[in-house]
Amino acid sequence: MYDFSYPLGNVVKSTRYQRGLTQLQVADMADIDVRTVMNIENSKANPKMEVLYPLIRALRIDARSIFNPELQRETPALQQLRLMIEECSEQEAEALIPVVESVIAALRTKDAIEIG
Image (cartoon, rainbow, N blue to C red; front, side, top):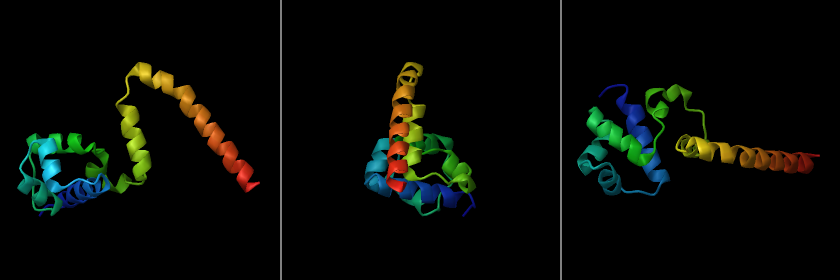
């Protein structure tokens, strides 16, 4: 099909597998037909925004992984963390900053001790 159909299909399929979802569950979550999910995963679809937007939102996919697959260097854990942070309110983000700084410092200290 189109060159951009492959990154979309790959990302949707891998995200669905990672989340332990069936194609039918994804279709229900995005309020689209299951055949549409199948066609997207098999790179046989050129979905309209009315399909693409709810699908990306339902699976919580970072759109950069579809539109800029060459930038796909983040691990699944970092992607998940980034999405969680992006959904925080400003107040939640401010409250999390010192917690995250403390946890990172503790982990790095632990790693330094184990290496040394």
